[in-house]
Image (cartoon, rainbow, N blue to C red; front, top):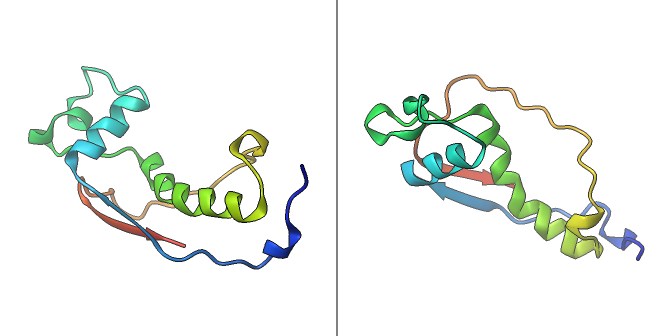
Length: 98
C-alpha cells in the first residue's frame, strides 16, 4: 500500500489534550514508575510527570495524518524525537498540538 502524496503540506486542526492528576499517575504507572517513586504516583505529593509526557499530545495529530495519507501505525518507524523542557510539566492542564 502506497502513501497518498497529495497530503504533502496538510495541516491538522488543533488537538486539545486536557489532563488531570489521574491521567498523570496512569501515564507514570504505564511507563514503569514503582512504589518507591511516590512523587510520581501519589496526588498528595504532586504528582510529578516524567518529561516524556510531552510527546503524548502528538498522538492525535499523528493518527489524523496517518488516516489522511493512507498509512497505518504498523508502517511507522519512529526515528527520533527531541523534547526541551524549560520547567516541570504541571500535574494538570491543557495542551494543544497541530
